[in-house]
Length: 465
Image (cartoon, rainbow, N blue to C red; front, side, top):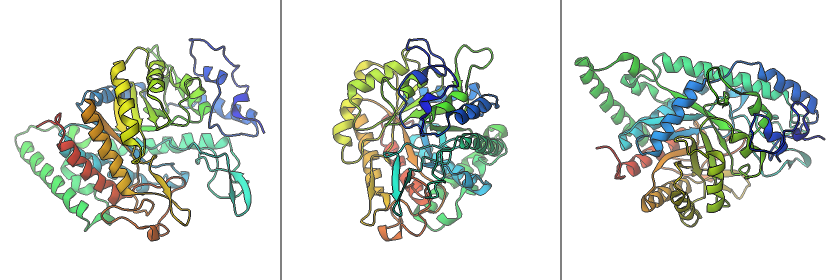
C-alpha cells in the first residue's frame, strides 16, 4: 500500500524559505489516507485544479478583518457546526436547521456582548477527520478507521472503509451545492432580523431556552419596527446575513488543488473555505501541514491542546505569521475541563509576552470526550460549560481577550452529549445517536450554552453599554 506522500503529481520541492502550494510534499505529512493508487490521487487532484473556486478572495479578506476586530475586543466569533459532514445530509432542511442554530446563538450572544457576532460555520467542506488509530476492529474484522465522507464510508465493511480518491471530488461538489444554497438564503431574506422569531426550530417549543429566545427576538423586532418608522433602517442590510465557512485543512492534496493566486493579487489563497484550521494532531513545526499553511493568505485557526508547550506555540505563531498580520491567527484552545486551569495560563502568558497579534477562542468539546460503561463516545455538558467558564476567567485574569467559541453542534434533535437542563442521560444516547464521528451538542444544548455565554459576556468589562 502506497501513502499519499509518494504521489508523483508534482516533484518534491527543496526545503527552503520559498513556498508554493506543493512544497509541503517535501515534509512528513500526518493523518493522510493510505490510498492504494497514487496515480488516481494525481488524476483527481488534476481535475480539481480546473474547478471554479468555492469562495472568493474578497470574502476571505473580510473574514480576516472581522477576526482582527474580534482580537481587539470589538466583535465576537461564533464558530460551530458538524464534527464531520455527511454527503447524505446535504439536503435543504438539514442545512436550514444548521443555519438557524447559528443565527439563534448569534442573536443571544449579541444580546450579551452588545457587539457584532461573526458567524463562522463548520460547513461546506468538513469532510475529513483525523483519527487516533489507522484501523479498528468491527465484528471481529480489522478495517480502516472512518476518516470522513471525503475519504471513505462509515459503513463498517473493509471495502466501504477503503480510502477512495474519487471521494475528494464528491466532497468538492457537495461543498459547492451547500455554499450555493447558503448564499441564496443569506441574500434572500432568510436572516431578516425583523423576523428572528422565524428562525425557530420547532422541537425547541416549550423549553426554557425557547421562551428566553422569544423574548430577545420580540424585543429586537419591536426596536427595529420603531426605527423603521423613522426611516432609519436599510432593508438590504436587515435582510442579508453573512456566513463564513471553515474546515480542518487535513487532506493536503485536496487543499493544494484548491489553492490559487487570484488575478491582481500577489498571494495564494485556499479558495475552498474562508478559514482553515490546523488540528492538534497536525501542528508539528517541521510537518507538512505547517509548511502548507504558512503560505496561504487565509486566516488560520490553530487547535492548541494540553501537549502544546508555550514555547512551541510561540514558535508556531512566528512560523505561520512572521509579519504579525492582524486577523491571521485564531488560537483555539482545547485543554479539557480537568486541565484548563493548569495548562491554559502558561500558554496565554507566553503569547502575551511575545507581543504577537492573535485572536483567542475556546473549544470546550475536544478535551472533554468520554465513554460510557457501554463504550459509547459522549461528552458531558457540565464539563463543556466548566472549561468555557474557566477560559473566560483565565483570560480576564491574564489581561487578554477571549473573543470566540468553537463548538461541534447540530440543529437536529440528537442525543449524543449528556446533560444540560433538558439534555439526554446515558440511557438516552441510543435514541438519536446519529454522528458519524464525535458527539455533538443538540439544538437545545447549543441554545442553553448560548445563554450561559451571554451571562459571561455581560460581565466582561469591555462590553459595550
